[in-house]
Image (cartoon, rainbow, N blue to C red; front, side):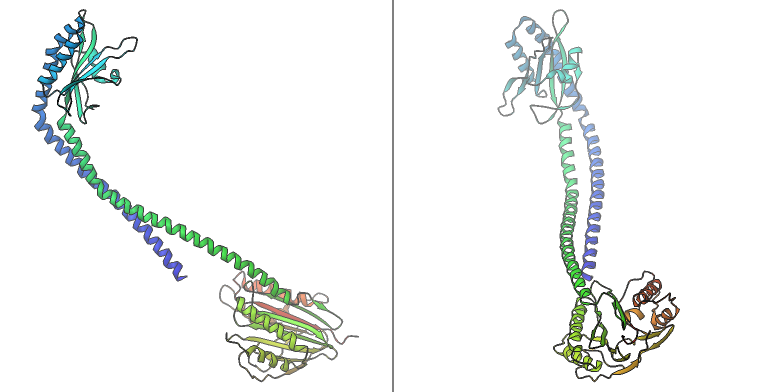
Length: 491
């Protein structure tokens, strides 16, 4: 139990730690992102102030370059001189370092055929080169809006040819009739915005490092929780399987134990005998036994100290010895003394049993008995009750060589001897109150007898009285009773 409590506390501690770490990760992420955004806004404002003049200058250069080459492009296009057109575009790129490329896209007609190319500076060689525009440029704003205007600046976009943000200034190329037949555009790199984007990425990466570390640690704790949960579930399944196996074994043991007891009411011309046993657990340490031999009724009742399997094993041994010894001895004290001798041989467990043995002569009603530390039985005559007093001998197994004493009592026809274990007198209700011998006697005297009451009915009345007293409280001890009614000498 202590180990399971420590395990539960450790599991709760791990869960709390994981929750704290994840919460800290969220807080750190919020603070880091807020600081990063604030820094980026401030840096963007500073860059905007510094770059305003430069942007205006670059904008003017791009617009002037396209405006300057546009008449030549329209003339060469009208003459169909494609090579000269290419050279004109290359000249724009070579004469204006601020322009990294020039787009030239023919208008797409009803046939859907696209014809466009890009003149640019090859970064690997430094030479100016041409390439076919391989993507659908009709979806780009520099073409879509440029074809219908005489000057359009596109929104920034990521270039397909450079890892940098670009903006394109485009204009429509017209034929002699003033119809737009193509689009020409100058690509301007946005170095300041690109640098800011890189700085933004780097800031975010730095801000995410502690967050990722906290989250990884939180995931590690969650992994530990999952692992411990799986291991605990596996242990629980193993424990449940073992418990189920033990319960099956206990059920079998209980059946065997019940089978060793006389379960049916014994009735003949001289006596009626009935017994009952309700163990506190599946197996218990209480027992009773009786048999008729040579005109005498030999009977006994016992209560082994302890409960469960050890008590059940000691009970089985004691009952077997009683049967073996009683068939060869007539005096109860001799029976108990022989049982005590055998119980002390090799008894390293310190277990003992309170025991009551009696021999009733069926022809005379003379009862001889020996009490080895057990509850004193009651003799019921109608509604009168008396106790079978006896010297308090030591229980069987308590000390080897103990001397046991016999007692005698005359049992009249119609009298009933009621024997029981302390599970009856010490039955406890929820308030901690014991049933007691007084309630046993008052239950016997207060019962309503209709006709010839059987001993089984007497035991049933007593069981109902105990159940009404405890009112569902957990049974703390085995409850065993044995009732013997002497009807007189057999005729």
